[in-house]
Amino acid sequence: MLNKKSGRFTEQPLSIRRDLNNKSNWILNEKVIFIFTNAKTDNTFAITVPEEFSTDFASTPKILWGLFPPMDADYAKSAAIHDWLYYRQEVTRRFADELFLIALKSQGVRFFKRQLMHRAVRMFGKKPWQAHTKRKEEQCR
Image (tube, rainbow, N blue to C red):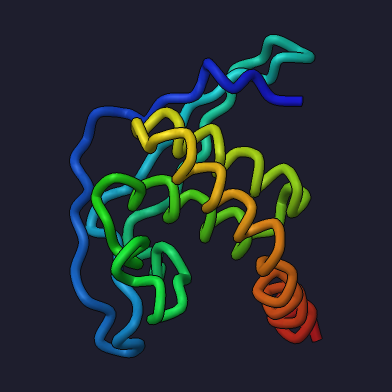
């Protein structure tokens, strides 16, 4: 279990540009860093999303864009961290989703909204996770 009160982003502003190879994605001009403490071990870790990473931020169905726009400053950094964790798969999917919830809280996303977003990634994140697994397997061949 992670310590939900300990996560924070470094202070740098989010700097992005459109991904010309994938119009629904954005490219980070600067790295995004999220620092958190594991409650079990009391160890502090940093997740760093490198500059030039391409992200779609929140993978929201168009019908919900009025409530959850894909690129919203309230949660853009949290979504970038989550996308990076899914892309790299160096942690479990559950861990990535839990860290997303912690990151949302650290960005000040209200309780109800962050709970909905967390439940959405738990319910619908399996397919993207598997797509990244397949991509990694194909790269190893």
